[in-house]
Length: 356
Image (cartoon, rainbow, N blue to C red; front, side, top):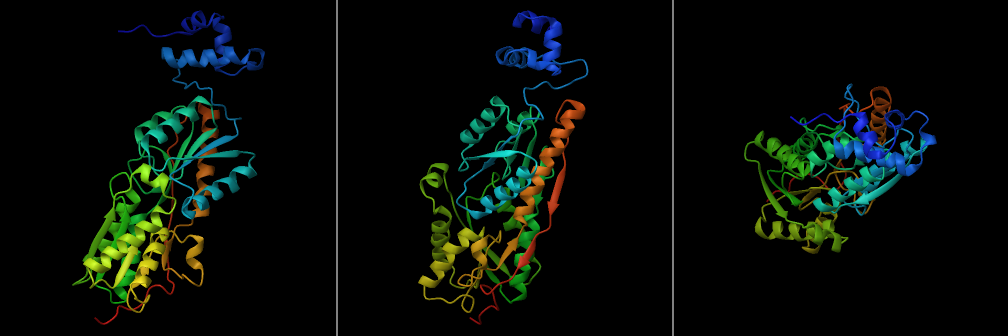
């Protein structure tokens, strides 16, 4: 059995007294020590695996830090920029500033961002999506507060702001089915377990279709690699155009297309028009997210609203709670979930199914 690391061991390695180590770790008169000594002590605590008898978690992260790292796939889609602005609205009121980092769904980039957040002692990290590597996020969460925004996942061991995408899919499905649509298509970028919101929206649509006799759902997807995504700023639009074109060719009986999000729906919109079809007279088109362009008169996209700005604000408030929890208990342990109800926003892009 390995010998338990003590304050004396840390002190000996750092070349200072145990009393000084204790003062640094508990932040008592810490200003009397130079920056290099403080950093060395915390580095030794981590590398040597020191733990206090009370189980207190020691970290260089301080509640007074004011820099928040925001992690998101990209800033081209207004879905993420709206969430980011919501975070910043709340953060600035409390004197915090933000730093935005994009991953383009690349796991190595996500890992690097988390490592840098830990290294540079930010006040906390907010993921504008569910982390692709939850275990790394959990480990980070033991050192500083971490909050995620995304699909409702009951087993996620992080504070989260949840969007119930299954219910969103059901709402959209019910809307179209009540209009008489029975041949519905779902088009999406990469559809796998790392993109739970996309999967859950599809499952919600499927569940809605099962409740109506004769209704069916066909799924069209395209795998998008991180390299392709970072090299093509219009990847969602072009994917929507391509998948809608494929759908109309392979399944001409389709009367309604549901896109994974509004950006993909815009590509589908142009593809439908280029085929000489009318929206919604010949085919209905819907999306998710209710980003700003969807309300414009020339688009009028039926979509699902998830209160994106409010989600961003709530994510910051959860982060604040985590920081306060550290002040009280010396560790980050709260797992709080806040869920926003989605709502259907019907517009002119959806209508009664045509009689074919």
